[in-house]
Each structure stands twice: as C-alpha cells, then as structure tokens.
Length: 293
Length: 300
Image (cartoon, rainbow over all chains, first blue to last red; front, side):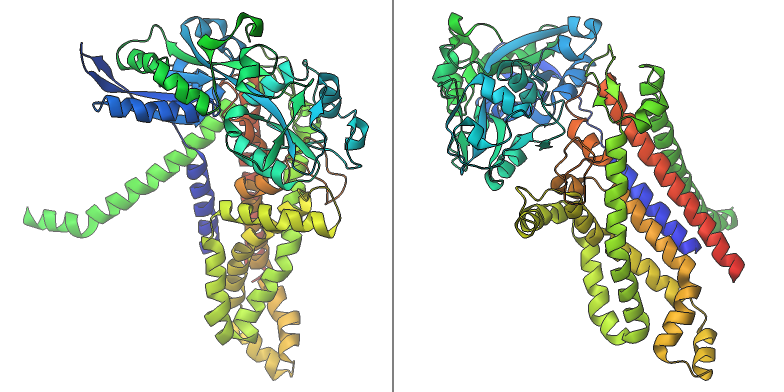
C-alpha cells in the first residue's frame, strides 16, 4: 500500500512540475554604428507571432550577429511580460490600457506596424455567401439558429467561437457584432485559430471567425462577405470592410539598439510587401476612410 | 583521516545526496502549494468575490483587467470536470478489473505476454495524441451515430479519458490482486470452489482496498488531464443536458484563457483559483486513498 501511495505522489508531482511552465527570458541589447548585434525577445499575440517570426528570420539573415526570439503565449502574456521587462517586445491585439493598470500602461510605448482583418468563415457546405451585420449578430447571439432563416438550406447553425480572452474574438465582437453579447452557452470554442479552422472544416453548418492571416491559400473553409463586402486586404484599406484591428508591438520605454533596428526593419517597403502576402494589412497604407481601430 | 574519508564515502555521501534531493522535492511541493494559494486567493481577497459565488454560481464573466467587477461563477467547469471524470471511471473500471483478473488468474501467460505490454503502450501515448485521435475519429463518429450536428460531447471526453486512465487502474489492481495471500487461494480450492468462485467470492473482496486505490488514482489523473479532454468536449459555456451535449471543464478553461488574460487581473486570478481548487481536490483524493489504505490494513 505504501508503494502505491508513493507512486501516486510521484504521479501528482510529475504532473504539477510539468504543468508549471515558466517563460522567463533574459536579453541584452547593444548596438554599434554599422552592425546590429545583440538579442531580443518578442512574445504575445498568437495572431501576430507568425508575422514577427518571418520578420525575425529575415532580420537575422541580414544581421548575422543579431538574434531574435519569437514566441506566442497570448496578448495578456505579452503585455504583462513587457511591462515587467522580462521581454523586449510585447505583441498584443488590444491596447495595453485595456488589460493593464494605468501605471503599467504608461511606461509602454506602442509601435503600430500592421493591422489584421477578421473574416466570418463557414463550413464549405453552407450556401450563403453574404450576411448583413444584423444577421451576423443575430446568428452569434443565438437569435438565428438555422441557415434557412438567412436564405440558405434547412440546416442548423453551429457556432464555433474563440475563448473569452481571445484578441480575435474581441475584434470580431466589436466591429462585426457591434458589441452584441455573444451567446456563449450555445457556442463551441476552439483555443486557437488553427483548431478553429479544423473544426469549421469538419463541422457541417458551422460558422466562426478567423484572422486573414489564417486564410491565405486555404480552401477548406468559406469566407463570408459582410453587407456585400468581401473580406480582402483592399477592402480593409479603403474602409469598406469594417472588421479589423491594429496590432500593437509594445516596448518598455523607447526602443533602442537591436529592438529599434528590428522594428525599423518591419517598417521597410520590402518587408511590407511580404506582410501583405502573409495576410496582414500595412498600417501606413490605411486610408482615412478606414478610420482608426 | 583516511578512515574518515572512507567512512564518508561509504556511508554519508550517498545518504546526504539522497536526503538533499528528498528535501528539494518536499520544498518544491510546498512552494507550489504556497504559490497556488497566494495566486488563487486573489479572486476572493483582491477582487472580493465570495467562495460561494465561485463554487456555486454559473455566471462566468470575469473582467480581463485590474478593475474587477466581473462574475466568477465556476460551477459549469466544476460540474464538467466531475461529470467527465466519473463517466471515464464508469467506463474504464470494468475493463481494468477484468484485465487485471485476466492477467493474474485466468491467463497469466497470455496476460504477461500480450496484455501487459499493450497496457505499457497505452501509458506511453502522449495525451495530445489521445486528444487528436479523439478529435478526428471519435467526435465525427459520435456525430454520425447519434445523428448530431457535431460530436463534441461529455461522452467523447469520457471515452478518451477512460482510455487514458485504464492503464493506471489496471496496474494498481494487478498489484493489489497479486498481494492477496496465496493461502486464501489454497484454502478456497481445498473447500472445493471453482476458479471463478474463488475470484469472485474471495480474491476480489480481499483486494478491494487496493483496487479502490487504483480507481481513485485514475480519478485523480482524469481530473487533472487537460489537453485531450479540451480537444473533444467542445468547450461550450453551459451545463450539459445529457452525455451527448458539449460542456467545459476546469483544466480546459485554464488552458484556454491563461495566456491571453493579463497576469494579476481578475480573469487571470479566477483561473488561478480554479488551479487551486484542482490542487485541493487532489489533496482530498490523497486523503481518501490513505483512509481506504488504512481500513484495508485494519481488515488484514
């Protein structure tokens, strides 16, 4: 019996140690006039992480002595860690003010380089291709429950959402649903965009939402137009597609050294072309009609 | 001098290393417990929610900032965790006990050659693989069989978990059965019982406390498992109507929102409270196991 108990304790301990993971990264920055050296760590928003990773790979090829570590972890993690200086750049889908205390947010400097659009996506068996904003909020608040109520076939609608704290969910709620309260007690939830895409693709009659960056070159889900406007980069630029948000890259105080060089690189024309190919909008190309999000 | 060094090598060196390592583990356990209490109590101390609200309300709407003022009723997650774990237990226990009996009494040769290695493999499969297979095979199958729009459900979670805890319960049960005094067997056969009568009337009752320990060990594992269950229960914020409806549980909710919520904010603290609750529940399991073990020894 003692043996069994010891075994149990071992299982509990291993479980606890494995669950408790820590992400503490040290970094040092230094710069010379011509060459960029040093290392930096960026973490946070999982919507932004793929883009920052591509930028990091390019940047390290151009500056072999620099090293850039990119991880996801979520906007909350990015904001908290940059506020306590354990990382150099904190990526976030939302402003620091919305999650941190005023004191913490005041020390952070926002670098806005790209914006990200969010599209409503449906399983490929759904015949509807356009929804009005009103219909969309009625669907996500649970008032409309069958595709035949919006001109489709007689098929139950399955809502697939993201967790409450997701940045994509926040954007979609604010700009597509006009802050209507989503009916979370009838919506399935997927932890990340990749899983959501798989679940939409495999669940008949389902609807969810994905950032444009997850829709580049994907044909297993169908994009939905909102009020007749297709979810494209151009329509975000010209202001006709409303569901998008600015991505924030926060530094603690002014960016210096390798961090500044990296952020500057992300703003170059060559990288911006690549950014658009990856499904992100370049913030400097936003027209005034698009407004500020 | 040389004598002392020799003595140190022979006796104290090994003993000190073992003692230090042991103390480190105790300290780690204590500090994790302390940390969980420190973080988990924030919901009640900093944001002034009542324990009653946390345990029994189903209104889950914590504010993701430092102002608080949200709702932290975690009842849906607690019920989800309990329901899925007990369903898993219900499915796994008969199979486990049957396998254990088969391996020890009915066909030890086949059991040791085939069943035991198979169970070893079960243990070795990472939980993400269980979840993934569940997501791609089980979830669509449930949708198809029961003619539902989707198969994310308590049932899917229960089946996946049952597979994961089956080896735990089985191996502990095997130990328990092997510990049954051989004299019982000889005495039973001498009295003219059949093998099955011995298994059913003598062996299993005397191995009960060990088997129960295995069952609770399995329950503890089921309770703490996050990944695989999270992939198949649908994570819907609602109490399940039946075992075919989707719901959410504590571990899945922690995993979903821990990264995106700001550390120290109400939302994050509420998740820590759930982590604390998981720890407390696992302590309760340990306690129950000790009581059962003690009773078992008393009987002997």
